[in-house]
Amino acid sequence: MNHMGCERTAEVRDRILALTKSKGNEGISDKALQSLVPEIPNGDRAKAINDLLSSGKVQLFQSSQGGDAEEKIVFSIIQESGNKGTWIRDIRLKSNLIQTTLNKVLKSLETKKLIKAIKSVNATKKKVYMLYDLDPDVSVTGGAWYSNQDFETEFVEILNQQCFRYLYTKLEKSKDCPSGPVAGKHASCASSDDLLKYISELGISKISLKLNDIEMILDTLIYDGKNRKRCEKIRNQDSK
Image (cartoon, rainbow, N blue to C red; front, side, top):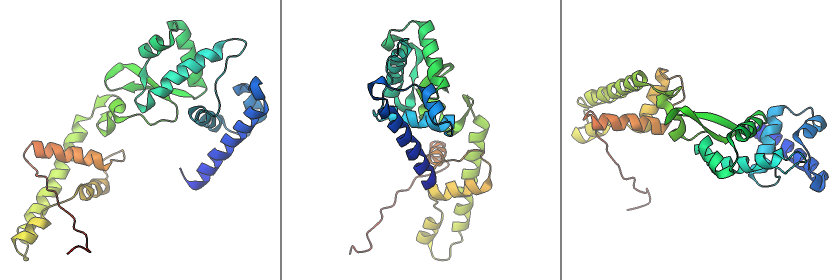
């Protein structure tokens, strides 16, 4: 998020906190907030409320209808799960809510953009719930190698081939190194950053790959006997 975006988020958060405090113990509903600050988009308002809930500066409280107390319990359970999320079965066991009531509470929290449901690669027919603004852990999404919970075999194979081709080309060029075998050996090596830059420039990936993704590909080449890993110690320039 850029500097202006951070300032905007903080401003919205401060306004909502001030309005909440002005109501004292009576509290304020989301509907009332919406009417008091109509110029703030629903998404920005939801994010600000979520931030305030996460930091403990505001709380969901029980209204005369009693529904908000159940939402508070469910929200707290989901919040504790972090970016790995939690299954609906675990929420039901921890909250002691019957399934029909829990479904209504989850739907309400989703509508308010306080939580979201994510399909997990570990069980494609099940969903995990987490706070709306969190990025799911790779153990949930499968990372770069999964699309719609399906393993991208062809994509991984293409990356394997391109990484191997890059390394093999460097190896062949190093054989003609005029500076001797030591320099040639050094010239045959490539860092993970080199490979990441090369793959990014090829434009063969629809998503932005990370260094860890490339290192996973390099590990598969090592397991296949097509690559070797080399560690180098970096000496301090001031050391003698």
